[in-house]
Amino acid sequence: MAYNLWYWPSIQGRGEFVRLALEAAGIEYRDCARTKDEEALLDDMERHAKRGPFAPPYLEIDNMVIAQVANILMYLGERHQLAPSNMADRLWLNQLQLTIADLVAEVHNVHHPVEMMAYYDDQKPEAARAAAQFRDTRMPKFLQHFDDAVTSNQGDWLIDHRWTYADTSLFQVVEGLRYMFPRRMAAIEGDYPALIRIRDQVAELPGIKAYLKSDRRLAFNTDGIFRHYRELDGD
Amino acid sequence: MAYNLWYWPSIQGRGEFVRLALEAAGIEYRDCARTKDEEALLDDMERHAKRGPFAPPYLEIDNMVIAQVANILMYLGERHQLAPSNMADRLWLNQLQLTIADLVAEVHNVHHPVEMMAYYDDQKPEAARAAAQFRDTRMPKFLQHFDDAVTSNQGDWLIDHRWTYADTSLFQVVEGLRYMFPRRMAAIEGDYPALIRIRDQVAELPGIKAYLKSDRRLAFNTDGIFRHYRELDGD
Image (cartoon, rainbow over all chains, first blue to last red; front, side, top):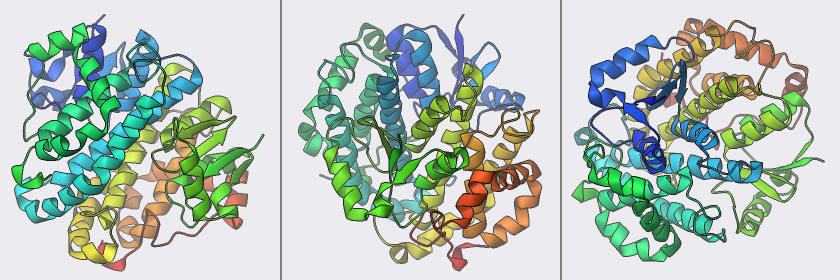
């Protein structure tokens, strides 16, 4: 039975972390709001009075709703063997995924520092300041952490010799930061060879190769979470 | 065997969500940096080259390090029966805890909107703007979601008839917001009676009652995550 995935139809956003894991594993899903529209998503959220999502993305299966990216991926990981089953590895992957979620929240904050519900145009000077600190301090700290995570393992992937949902998520982190800060990433990504190797390996997974060529993969754009504004980039 | 909990010694911060669950359950732990100091925490973090934390809090047990609040609580929940074991309930609690984490990140952003590593004094006008949107839009949205979470259940607690780590976390959310925004909370908390009922029940748990009276419970202060600045509050 196919999953129903609900997320905003016109951006990669947080939903992309879920899409990538599903696509890499060849798991069937309906990207519901993309076959309908944003109204359909808002209507569907209204329907879930009990145990509903705070926000998309969420997954529907057997009348159960699962929201929050790391929670969805943990569920998919357990059910479809996209993650090891032993406790230590399972907790480590979840920990990494939550650190990726922290990065994503800080990335969003770069272009929306003072009013998350208002336009970027209404907070450009503040965004410039937030971007400088993110590029100089936070970005290297996160990337170093992820690079260390890869090198702390003996196998080809984050854990052992099989990809997990945290590998596909790191792919998206690198792709997103390359789109958002091309100059900054060009300047520093050579410092994180293990992380970039994971990105390259994920890009070669058959399911991901097919997905990236398909029209199911939306392009990055300035409505999403990773946004390119030239004035926010720097070496 | 007692857990080693590592967190900044002078604030409640994110570590408090872990402390509250441990205290409510009567689980033995050493609050390591409080018996030593901040230097000891920084030294300890250095030691974990492999599978280390991105940031505190983290828990050490049997040479394993577990970081990220929701991840730590999920572990404690499974190991000490502070959460139901069936999949649907387990995922629902984790989802709620991750939504609490989102709230905490937004709360931190209120007083540090443009530079998370700089002082509040260097970003006061921006914080005033961030606080207004948080108080008017985001705070009611989160509180309503948590109130709905409580009322979607038939028992006395978030799930059934026993407290879980998400109940103790909601207690901290209410306490933190009351400290941070006393005027705003006084104006709106009556709209969320189910959430306030959970707060009151948690306060009466024997482990929590003893903890709140002890010197292990730090007071809220303006170095923590929930900070009271009078100029950021409003009805």
